[in-house]
Image (cartoon, rainbow, N blue to C red; front, side, top):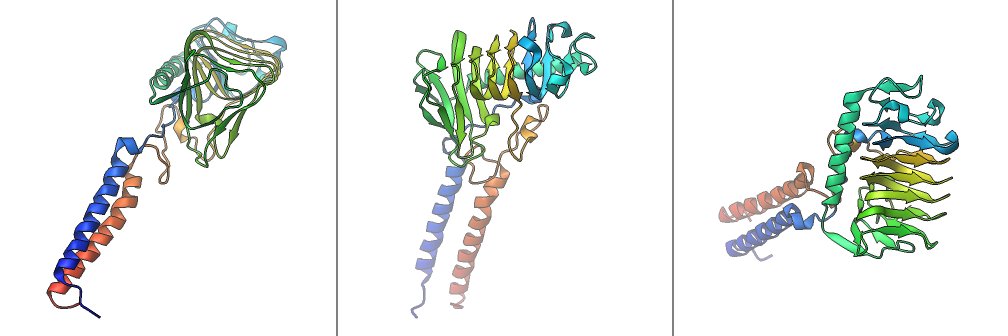
Length: 314
């Protein structure tokens, strides 16, 4: 077999270095990580319902809520729920509210509302934004940030809105509706459907106010500047979080959404856990090692080959 000369080996090494550098730069480049990170809810995360003022009401007191409930800055007297409706803790800023389950914790409520404000601002500032039709019925959307020309969203035409995770459970969907009023209107019987790994915990609706119609099936976290209303029989997998206004319920089922296999991102403002490759979110050290270690092995092997060739070993 013909011996490989020094010039050939040097050329191979240079090509390898170029290829490895290109891959590393590509992974480290922000443009290569266009996928959105989740919106960190911090200490607002444990809440299925978090309201501002003046109250939380439930017509007939028949709603079933899984997750914590809180009202601030209004007093606990405005919490119109019974303890047996809530699987979780009911928090108030003072010594009023439903007993025996109510817990008074003003500092926690202040922190949770501050974290909600931060999450609202975060979701409002996400880019790049794709503009879609106001009517979401029949649309099939992949992860990303969305707004509409009308600055509102509606789901009223009968066909479901489908959110497609494309087999990535960390896919994030953010809807921005800055309209002053009902920025989100979910019609009676309307459905938001998750497919291919999409999770309700990673769906965010940033609105002024929102209304969810009778028997609608809704998913996602509503981050409202003002009020949220859920009509009779509506089912929500996510959170109803109102910064300033009230939350109105009527025989609803509300379940706080938790990402499968990972609730660290919602740990009272703690760290956001970002999966390793092939996730296309932000790069972290673990992702870098997937590239750096194989690159080092390749370069070391080629360097050894050149040294051996010079010593006439190959």
